[in-house]
Image (cartoon, rainbow, N blue to C red; front, side, top):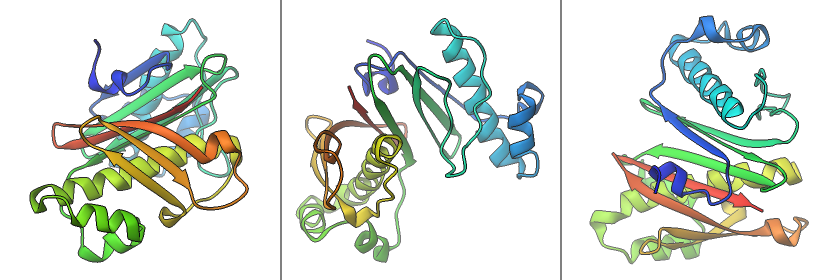
Length: 216
């Protein structure tokens, strides 16, 4: 059935996860020029993602490609490819798809941890806050991280198509924990109908929450 990461995406062509490590010598010149002044932790995350992506290109029958962020910070993928990158403590993941099969993908992974109480107000809408508050107290911290991550995944999926900058409060989720799914609905006008409401998947694993959204 594949890994948990692979199961988040029904139409993606490739998904990989790895522990970040320094791979400076494997970076293309353009990638190194972008990241060379960063601290080792950031270089490890950046480089590991690029190595994973190139393995994905090879698996898809595509030539190597330097994945460098554009002016908005989002990765620029080779023609015909959509993708998403996420990393958290000790973990990096990449998902890729052919644009003939999927128009956009969004991946986010977060480490489960206690957040400062005030952050809930920044992440959740009033309806979401009421829902989380009605869940068993033992689950609330993890569910709050899941809301954060799912909104990040939705944002990453919609952004290449709309170039819309959204705040957490601009998106409202219906979380369905028993199904491992969520429904994200934008609360701002102007987004195309097929982007303004998207379904996603999520899973808790190894002290993390993984969230994926794709638009076919």
